[in-house]
Length: 212
Image 1 (cartoon, rainbow, N blue to C red):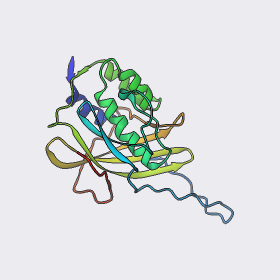
Image 2: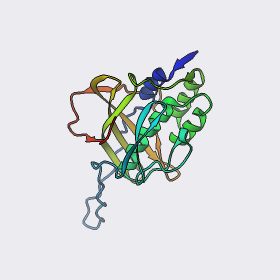
Image 3: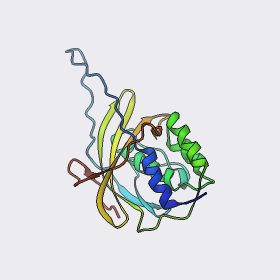
Image 4: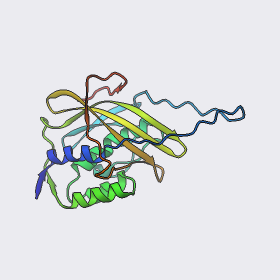
């Protein structure tokens, strides 16, 4: 079966969204050292945009990605901003990877687990070719870091986007883990998958400047 990159992008957006429910335990004793302040609302510094198979994604010399081939860029800062860029770039890479590069992409940008295994099985059954047309490409416009834990390092990011010429805003959650000195997307299983939801505006979100 042949599936266009446009269709695959939509499928990947559904495949990678997942709400992270992990919560840390606060130590409020007088002898506990205060946790370092974590900035979850600032946009990544040095924000630039690159185009991958017709999709414009944000990058940063500071927060990443800083390594890897074009099809599987990786190397993110261990900060909320690094997690945001890993969520957007990794999800896009999963969506547009062709039949030759998708195994490398999956192994590079996702965490091991049942969600990855299920995604690989589904992806092996389709053929992806072509670039995403401008009329259907997502435009990433903002983010909200809904959870960020230092130990163990995990993050949950809500990504806001529009699709093609549709002005409606959509948001979907992405869960991440810090594995082997990098952020990895935690893919949900089909049973845990959560669809993107419409949002009225970007209240509570940090906007991504230069989104196009």
